[in-house]
Image 1: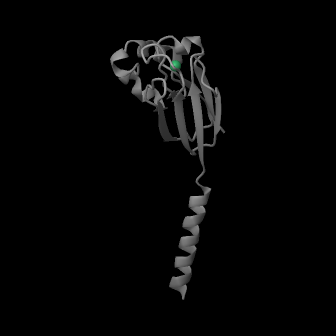
Image 2: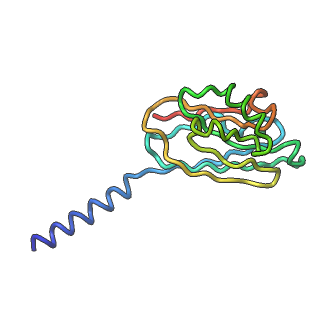
Image 3: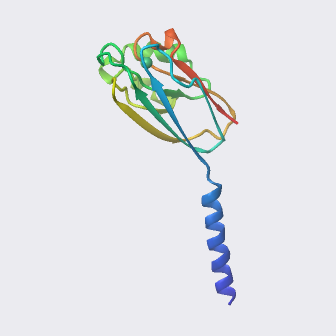
Length: 148
Ligand SMILES: [Cu+2]
């Protein structure tokens, strides 16, 4: 009887945990205006976050590709973007600075999309995301993910 009760409590605890683990999904669209369709995302600490980046441009990939790179707190977005410009062979993702990145999609051409899933930081604050295709961040293709 006691064993049955313990089992029941354990199962109840498990399902409570499953319900308590929150998740959020966002779809960001990039076109030719060098903006993300959303420049502000808000998530809870430790939440499972899914970001889908869709490139709806009709221009060729060499002219208008996009990615979504979420930087850690304290990472210098300008310096990161500078480094990215030298990483053309790696789709403008600077491997040398990978430790400054919380999550990122692949570079996607028009008509393509890529999805990334990650765990939001536990620490509340603002985290910058940028597109590292040449000129896009400088033109304003960026946003902020707020953890609170
Ligand atoms: Cu872009």
